Amino acid sequence: MSNRIIQFRTRIARSAEDVYTWHCRPGAFARLQPPWEHVTLPHGHPGVTEGSRVTVQARVGPLTSTWVVEHRDVVPGRQFCDVQLRGPFAHWVHTHRFEPVDATGCELVDEIAYRLPLGVAGRAVAGAWTERKLRRLFAYRHAVTKADLEMTPAKPMVVLLAGASGLLGTALVPLLQTQGHEVRRLVRRKPRTADEVFWDPERGRLDPALLAGVDAIVNLAGANIAGGRWTKARRELLRSSRVSATRTLLQAVASQTERPRVFINASATGWYGDGDDEWLDESSPTRGGFLAELCQAWEHEASAADALGLRTVVLRLGVVLSPAGGALAKMLPAFRAGVAGRLGSGRQWFSWIALDDVLGIIAAALQNDSWQGVYNAVAPGPVRNMEFTATLARVLRRPAVLPVPAALLRLLFGAMADETLLSGVRLRPQRLIGAGHEFRWPALEPALRHTLGKSADK
Image (cartoon, rainbow, N blue to C red; front, side, top):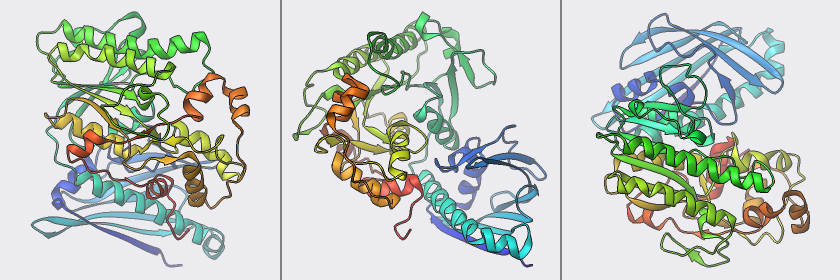
């Protein structure tokens, strides 16, 4: 039986050599994996060289398959092939080509020649499903590759990252690596790799000598806001995990004569409290509440960076959309089962942002010396909860007609329900807009379709 051949082409406004180099950098494989896939490299990636081999573990539902692929036909700046030596296909050759078009760009070409096992029976059972899966995968990969490469070229930096194991941190590392940055990840256990640095923020332990050569610090550390009911102990953990981490970082900086140039600190839109229907921006006052007090304490601690001479950027993050974690991941099971609906009245505002837009904002904040102070890291199009619910249901092709009463949410989640589920804020990213920042996903439905791999015709 002949092989099935599928080809994907995308024009990118960068040279073929630049696009090839991007694919060869650490982090490229992780950057290209959609958030709905479960794929790992148990032995890491050896780099793109002739004859190098990569082991890939992929999980589909309850099943896990192991692939071994070999890089062949490597032509620097132009192409390389991934040839399956062991895996689920009877035949698999993935050719990556980087074809110059003109002085302004190239065409990225992914060509896959494959054959399913079991001949005619295999094609009858899984042929259509496999092709749909590949088209979904490469639509995502090409969108990410094009957008990443067409960002303003980065000046390579050494970036120290706190909160590297969270949703944002795990996604940020490969983005920064593919931009040519060196990333050092802070960990609370014994370091296992050369890019890990030990710290114990609860005890204020971080060896200042380990900051040598660091150009920038990105602080995303903090316990999950929705990780449990807000008992007294939980509230203290939420506060200390943010404040102690920030204090530990800046105390280490203060002891150095040569200091990083920039300090980027996460915060949250909870700073504003419940905003009702009023449009708010970075100049608006807070309305109070536990989350507001938490964010104020966090930002106050981060303000010490400014006093130390570091350019300081604080990002008040909206609800980050990704099926890999956070609020959207918690919502998906109910929505996919068709048993979801609006929360309470559904009229509360929902200030959201796509994961790739958060990463792009952090990358821009590292590079732009004019960025300083507080920025609302939210998409320019907030929606009410009822609109978010209807949009997510439409993307998933599921009904969403079972509203969740406010009383039930309060029973299940206590005070957390009132501040995270039943209230909201209608925010404008005024300072990002003023800085000329362009969002990849400014509208909700396209953002959801991208991160969930759902095209409009499905």
